[in-house]
Length: 312
Image (cartoon, rainbow, N blue to C red; front, side, top):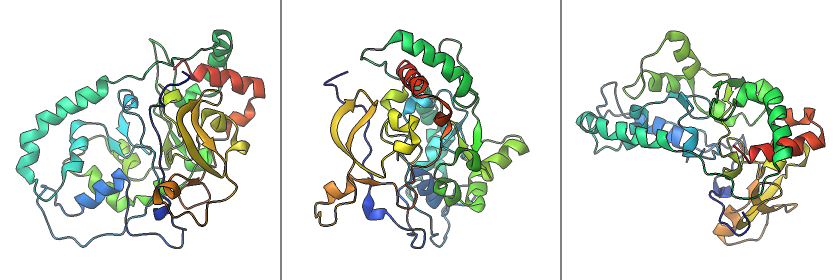
């Protein structure tokens, strides 16, 4: 693995960091972007006049596409049922009227099929197979009820974990209103389902635990990208308050981004590229808290699970 380019990176944008008392009326997150576009459409996808709405900005670290084939829903809270129509929502520019969607629906069936075919890369570095085998047993005992099992006979529970149980940053969950979720669930882009399933789409109580295929290649971690490595994920008390990627090379020991951990944000830095490279977990929507489940493991058990995660 040494010398290879890390497959993904996260570049947060401190220019949009806001406190809870100063929430901006804008959003760079794809989910709320789609809701904003839908605000100007009726049930038949015709353009209608609709005053702009204020949406809460929240950090999101886009998951890898290879998670897609296992999940029956999309987004961290299971906000939308998976399907080709859901992928078309982001083409809702004014130039695309109702006929556009009828004409191109088959194209997006092909897009859905392609995304569903994607699988994660294999870890290319050395793996301690004895340690990983121990980690596999520990993972099955402690983690599989949320994240599933792996191999040819894999399972994925698609479990939504209540916010008061997982404890991660709540802003993504609360940023989407029930009204906006309902409009999406009732739209052409959704699929009719049973009422109980629909209710969890429009008023969820937490986040869906993702599958972990290729997790070694998908740092940073948590839905808001606040945790830079798997080691930090396994050690909640040691997660840095502020961090910054300093190399495109993977930190092989901690498995994730190679970072520095400054004590404070730079006050006089004028270069916006440099300023945007810092992630301050003390800011609104950027919390590193939660998912403290690894604390029930000993240090040697954590290392075994970490080694096993390289094999997924």
